[in-house]
Amino acid sequence: MRIGQDLHDGLGQHLTGITFLTRTLEQKLNALGLPEAAEAAEIGRLVLEALTQTRTLARGLFPVELESKGLVAALKELAATVETISEIQCACICDNAIVISDRQTEMHLFRLAQEAINNAVKHGKAKQIIVSLTKTADEHVMLSIGDDGVGLPPEGANRQGLGLRIMSYRTHRMGGTLEILPGEGGGTLVTCTVPPAGTHN
Picture 1 (cartoon, helix red, strand yellow):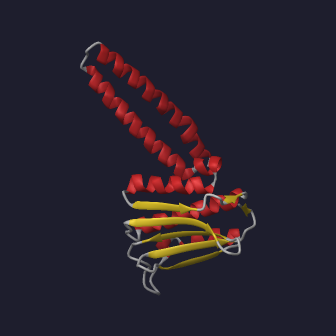
Picture 2 (picture 1 turned 180 degrees about the vertical axis):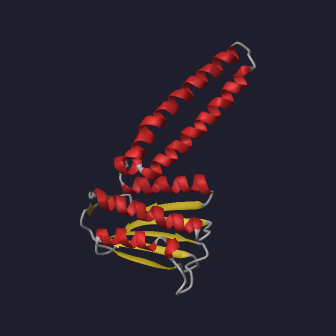
């Protein structure tokens, strides 16, 4: 968390400042009609790329949206980042009315979604991922991550690469239940359901 904050608030701010200075330099060189303006523009482009990568790393280590706006906003940001980095379609269908007051529950659910998405991309070879956050009839919060990938390994095969232990541990800490099943149309569906303690509409 500290490293993520330092990247976002420290290095990220420095790179933002350099980006503005480089843009100003480019404009001055252009006004003078100097060919070095093109080099300044290229430096600015590279710094902006480094800033984007820094922010992406920071979000992975410490989800800023989760801290400031809650789980729904953080999941939407996560889905958008996945689409940008991996070029995989990642949709987020969330009930915007869901508010989770317990920060640990929020963090566990967010990290579980990260792990499930990572599995879908790396192991499942998915082309499309759908993340949903809803409430059940008995007011439990249900997080689901479905993909259209190759599906689960056959029974008895080594599934350690799927990160099942990590997701099971997080679910246990929240007092919830975890299901990892084949999707109806193929792929894998990960569903984590947690009790209403610490959540409200």
